[in-house]
Image (tube, rainbow, N blue to C red):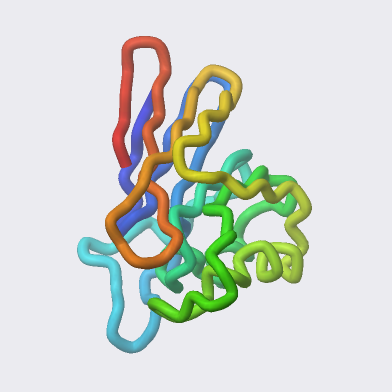
Length: 150
């Protein structure tokens, strides 16, 4: 398993069977205030990504221009949004993740609950809780004797 840090919360995990990307922010600038320091490689082609994991809905983790750089056949996993309708904390953007992904043309989208475990060929992913007040998940990747907590 090879791990490449791209910037902010974006990492690329490459195994023999999977090419996984987390929380894509793949442009140098997010807006007029946010920029990658150090600069990232903006010339890279991301069409080889086959699995995308989103930890939550904030714009630097669910970055629309970066999502548009990915092939539409990528499998996307994101936090399930089953908070009650009465919930009003930290904005409501988390409720639109699936809708946004479908509007962008992605079809292989899968919600995950906290403590779900899925097998991605040769990597096992377990979702863990976060202490924030909105749906966010921490990620535990395991392959043989290698473990990554993200």
